[in-house]
Image (cartoon, rainbow, N blue to C red; front, side, top):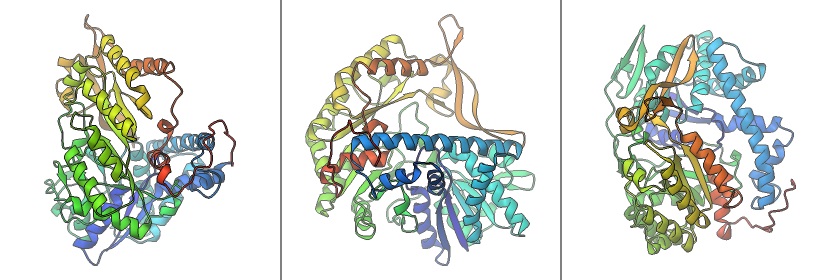
Amino acid sequence: MRAVLVFPPKAGATYVPLGIASLAPYIKARVPDADVRLIDLNIALWHLLAIEDPEGHDLLAFTQGKAGQFLDHGQTRYYKQVWDRLRRRMTHVGEQARLYLETGEADQEFLSILGSQVDPVLSLEAGFVGISVLFPEQVSFAAALARALKHTLNIKGLSRVRIVLGGAMMSAMPVTELLEAVPEIDAVVCGEGEEAAAALCEGRPLNAIPGLIYREGDHIRINKKAQTLSLKGLSAPDFSELPLDRYFNPVPVLPVLFSRGCAWRRCRFCSHNFSFGGHRKKEVRDFVAEMAIYTQSLGVRHFYFADEYITPDDMDAICQEIMAQKLNIHFHILGKPTADCTQARLALWLAAGCRWIGWGIETGSQRLLDLINKGTRVEEIESVINHSASVGISNLGLMIFGLPTATDEDLDLTLDFLSRTYPSFSGLTASAFVLFEKTYFARNAGHFGMRIEGRTPLINSQGRVVRSFRLKFKEISSDRSLRTPRGALEVARWQRFRKWLGDLPLFEQLPTEHYLIHVSASESPLKDPSQDETDAQPI
């Protein structure tokens, strides 16, 4: 059977999809006669929008290193304006996708785009089409694609072709609602998709495929969960079928994954663990060997680790193996700023190629850190951030404002913390607290002064609303009245406050891949001929 694995459009991002690249080798190993093809409809749509923009060709030439000076800060800022314009257009296309699902109508631009996305999938004459959905913004695109695909397949008498959705987002929403609202979707895979995808390629009946939720007549059937996969001996993702030269980077940048799940797994606000069956990791030597293969076969020297969290001990082992295998690479990780991230340890990571770390800081209030069960101390966080900067690693601080029970005093402590550490950061993200179903805070909402008002709608299809597990809520005041959650207000106060600390850093405004390339520039094949940030002229 021929399987086509599709990554649908995603507003705001143009990165290489790890999910479908990971499924392909597993299917081929389990079903040797399967013909697996990968299609990244996201990058295809970004190219289409770029070509239609007056400066889109210039943007492509600049981001792909074909013209201009990619590392020049002035040019980078100029072309960010063009990219932002494309993002707004992508957002509009997403709104049209939702309109198409709700009414069957949309503007001519969207219908033309939808046709351009359907054609390459149909041309491959697959028996199984798998659509990987990672983010909420992709749900409308994926559902619209499924509807258009199934309509054309039925006209051609190919109704037996199965359309199945998977990916992390399927664990963050009630998929029975999705199947009821979008009957063109035959089934959904919740959790890890390798076993189900292989079984579909084998032609097994839907009721015999673990982890599958599917429609049978007027009923929705839920199969038993799939077994948790061991990562030891699992085939490395295969990126060779993806158009690496079409992404918006001057050199290839690939995502890699050492572990699944979170090694900490105790943060009370986090919903990421719903997609996985527990924390597992690969053998260190095998993981580093994967990167060595990509370096040799695809010329890749830049990687971002997609792990939720790698422990310092595991990072030490990975870095020592990178150095033992003499890999000349640069990479980014997500980190937890605990006391065991010592200056010596961070220096080791730098020597192995770590160029920037996104630190899960969340807040500068120790009371709130304890409340969310982060397992960190404010004074230790401050020390780690300063040590990381001192050894030469770029720091991005990940902050959450408006955590449950937060007060003005907590916010003042956070602003004081950021004031002290600001020189050690290359950028900061500011997110308002989001409440997700099934988390500790959702299960105990009343105890933490919150009243849940329902799930957040994703799409409306044929009169049926599909919601996510993200919850709408109000905060309960001391007099029992209800008020808007303070997260947005805290973010606004931070944005006003930070103006006193300095200009908005460039790196904070860059996508992950560009951030990594910029901070790796001193050892990169790219040369930065100018550090003049005042030159904001186009190429």
